[in-house]
Image (cartoon, rainbow, N blue to C red; front, side, top):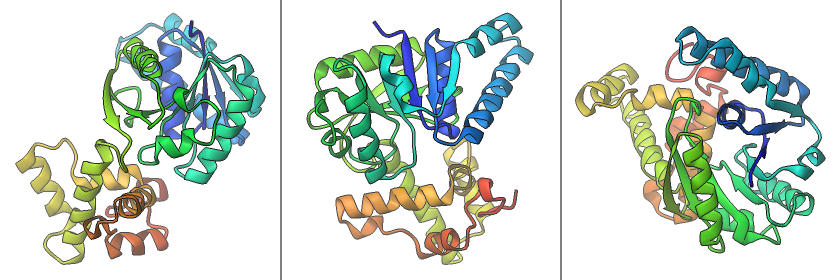
Length: 281
């Protein structure tokens, strides 16, 4: 029986994941090494829930009850009683493996350990534990409270039972689970990132301005957001990291990151979070 859910990492994805679990009635323990990140996460979640109240999608009492189910801590050992754990830390394979080794020693043997990774191999992460059958990918889309899809990744050793439990949990969150195999980038980023990368090549080669490229993809392809606006929203450093995972993992030159993308990241022009990317914020 899953009652208490641990979420590790209080960044944009982590606080969204914590919010949707608390909204679905679970007790949530949100863990981050940085106390200021936990404070910011709580404020972000409060603001998000208050918007639902303003739009009359929930009442104030419901919002307060959801916030009451959310606990924040910087101590990983607080997850000793968690029934399910989701990791949403930095997109770095070594960092994730180190964390999963710690979680494996800490959590009960029956607990599933899920990663919100958007591109790193679940098989590689699972191999850092003694329970690879209970390690899987649970890739939420940003912004988590609004996006209904969750990409479910089955590692080489992930059991069918673990996938069933995790998929049922996603349905309880009011979201739709879609299964992907453990290949670099899975489904979402295998298709999305090369499109973004190609849009950046088009800027670099003078095919069109960022505004023109985004206008064509929105008006001509019915995308809700142009690829360069989306890249700025995701973070150009994240886009570069995922392109590197695709390039390294699949070994095909078609996945090479655009030199302009590398240059912008080197200059600290990361998109919305740094105030400047393809657009100024």
